[in-house]
Image 1 (cartoon, helix red, strand yellow):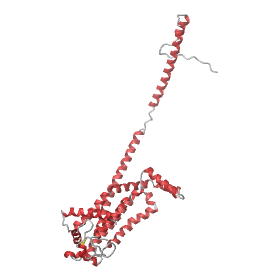
Image 2 (cartoon, rainbow, N blue to C red; image 1 turned 60 degrees about the vertical axis):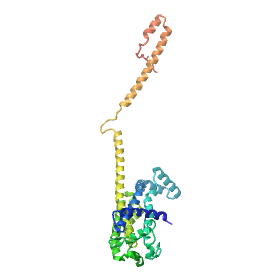
Image 3 (cartoon, helix red, strand yellow; image 1 turned 180 degrees about the horizontal axis):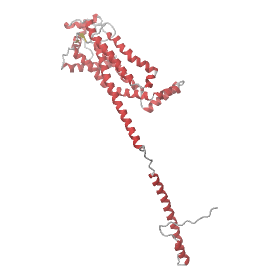
Image 4 (cartoon, rainbow, N blue to C red; image 1 turned 30 degrees about the vertical axis):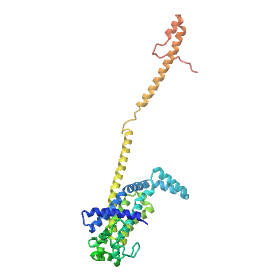
Length: 365
């Protein structure tokens, strides 16, 4: 039913196993362990961009938390209107809350696919997802992208004496599959000696990843009751869950959990440092623009531009008045100009070119 997940996971694991087989022995536990580690790294590299989008979305939600609370309070009795206003707010700021949990949602089917593929190397059990095969029958069947020879290579691989696909609570009948082709029956102490330290490392890594995420939350987001509950779950319950569920998980799955947390820890610090740097550059650029536009300390505002424009407008108005007066005077000269005393008198009283006329004084009542 989930073959569209199982086959890609098995093919990636197969490619890395073949790659490390050129350097190490194909049946070595380290070869298979490194294949699982780089399977995780490959999948997390594919999910890098969704992870960055998740971080940006989380930051946007923290910045908009006051507006979100205001909408919730304003439309507390109208859920439909509240949902519409929330959608409008999300559209205005261009973010989608689903992007905040997309990487986690994508990792869930990967974890399920890896767990199923690793368990399918040994199908001698009778529990959920097992076929109840005999060790001989199991050795003759392939496992998705792996051939029967690859299945035997995986079953014979040992990491510090423990089969990489074994787990602490594995039934004794299922442990018999590791004895095919002359292999020794592993003891539970050998399995626990490898699984327990990995479980402890996985729990500690899960706790520190959660602590790094909580430390970057804003004070308003951390004060939210729902966020406080989730923070406590991430800090204490999830790491404890790794210790409780570890005895029921194959060693290869615990290796997946450890390597996934190591990648998350490094990627988290890298992405947060990059985003913090981008925000600081934006703030510095905005501050520089503000300083350029603001007057210098102690300097008076420059009004020369305003005065210059006002003087130019006044000069234009005066010139227009002179031109108009001169034109009227010329028209009078043309009407009288016959050499009579009136004409000479008019010519004498006419203003010279370029001079301003004398305005007559008007009596005001």
